[in-house]
Length: 334
Ligand SMILES: [Ca+2]
Image (cartoon, rainbow, N blue to C red; front, side, top):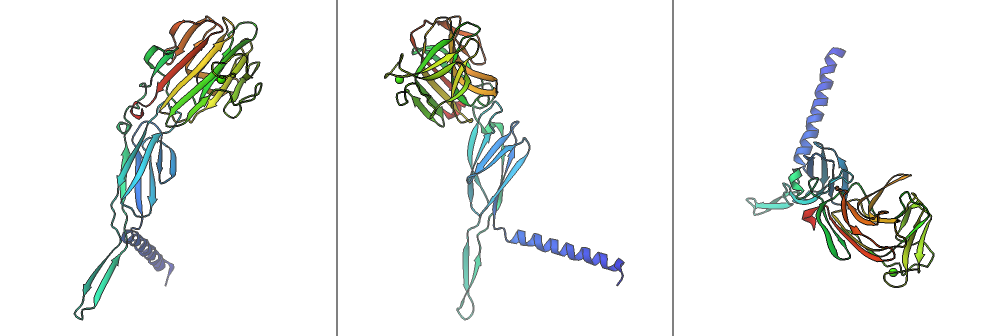
């Protein structure tokens, strides 16, 4: 046989092998699969059976295969850090036939049985923006209270994804000398988790409450103090240098539907400020706060969401103020 005759034969064998293989897959459909297509304009994460597929780009899809089963719980959420939040869980129904046995008797009354194995099938879920109710950009809203008095309602907020922690700051903007501020009875409630509460009573006086806090900017110093307190005998003292803030933070999960933060603040000196709100480390020498309450050097109390000009009157030194901000980032989830 010449080489010329042999080549088509090889191709034929390859083709036969290919079809045999295809046939096996078609007959023995022993897996279930779900294809999740991202039809939104943002990246999404897909979670099912404890497996997470992250950062699926718009128009792209992920295929999850598993043992044959009639349905699967699948969660899709916007990947954090894009200025939008939303999470939706759906039960995706799939074609499925359970294992069964059929028996018929032959002419000798001998049963002849055929067993069919369980068979899976495939299904597709196209994730649309409408699958995330209440989570379009620009609908993040908040309410602000000072000393239990509602000062601002339904104000526009900066969306999560820009921040990942709760921050307290002692700041003396452009002033001279150090400034001292105290925080006490801090409560941070976020949905879905966590709940965090700190009255600073359990730490050693003079020490740093490192079990729950991390330092972001050194200022001059910080530590547990017994100088003043709102409750109990201790509070968290932050001392900043002129134009060099003292910043400490309590880290939160990056994916948040809501944050409800509350704290008591005491400023020791007039004209030297403090701030509390949601924050993020941008670079080693840049820290940003969002949706934050500011006790300014101007002795006025400010709030900045997307609107940075809200002012709620003046503050006095050596007075405890109760601050509460409720941030709703996913209206359907609360
Ligand atoms: Ca206390």
